[in-house]
Amino acid sequence: MLHHLPNPSQSADIPGVRSGFNFVNCRRNAELLAQGYQPPKAVRTGTSIVGLIYRDGVILGADTRATEGPIVSDKNCSKIHYLQNHIYCCGAGTAADTEMMTVMTSAELDMHSLNTGRSVVPVVCASMLLRRTLFRYQGHIGAALLLGGVDRSGPQIYCIYPCGSNDKIPYVAMGSGTLAAMSVLEHGWRPDLDYEEGKQLVREAISAGVFNDLGSGSNIDLCVITAKGANYLRTDTVASEKGGRVGKYAIKPNSTLITSISVNSLLVTEEKIYSPSQMIDVQQSGPSGLQVQLDEEEGLPQPGGSQNR
Image 1 (cartoon, one colour):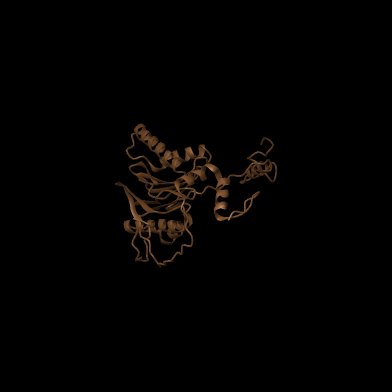
Image 2 (tube, rainbow, N blue to C red):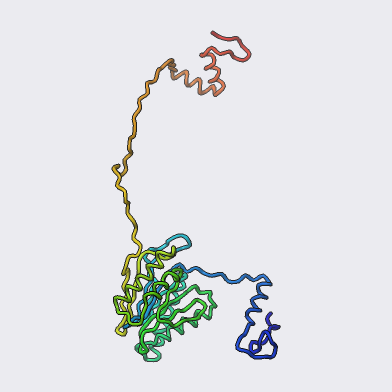
């Protein structure tokens, strides 16, 4: 279908002239749209995950809310996954995809350690394994990963996207709460952060994502990775607690308040008593017989007859 498009080594604007830019994909996308193909839509991850490099290592943070559309399915799920003793990974996107990606990569890293004899697997190996798998499926695996670890090269953080691309930066935020969390990181991060300052900055960044994004909420998990190992702080902070009732009510639970009482006297003007035999005859005669008997007792005229008094 695309055999008529120009050679990628040539310029799309001037045939036969090589350049540093290639616009073949732009023309391809335009033709696909003209044929009725729908462009891919952005996927909402519904998570706030944060990672930064501080003076002695790496600190990862994540919220604990899992959603199914507009429904909160789990208030305390774990989004920080184990890969190695010195490598952990935060996941945003489809929970099943992030869980399976991290489990498979952890097993592959164990095999790599056995085959090579390395006691400490480089962090870049974990990044390469994740990127290869995600790129192979061209974004159909809904897993946006934040990889952090410490090896012989020092602390490292990789931001890996579902399409397989990656960034290596000192601090990063991913998920639907990215904008709020990144604003906190850009304002407060510096290379010489100590242990307590780094944890507090991650807490503030995750809290900003929690309070500005409906897909994030509940608690804050932290994972501190140093050259000596990792310390996974499960439910380190409760970001959004359930509020209580402010007003005090004098009414006891399970009771009904009586506001007023009124008594009405009923005047009996007429009383009729039927014997059991008369009630049986009325029921056997049916509705028409009941109406005729009532008419006779009340003295009303009957059709086809004279009035009885």
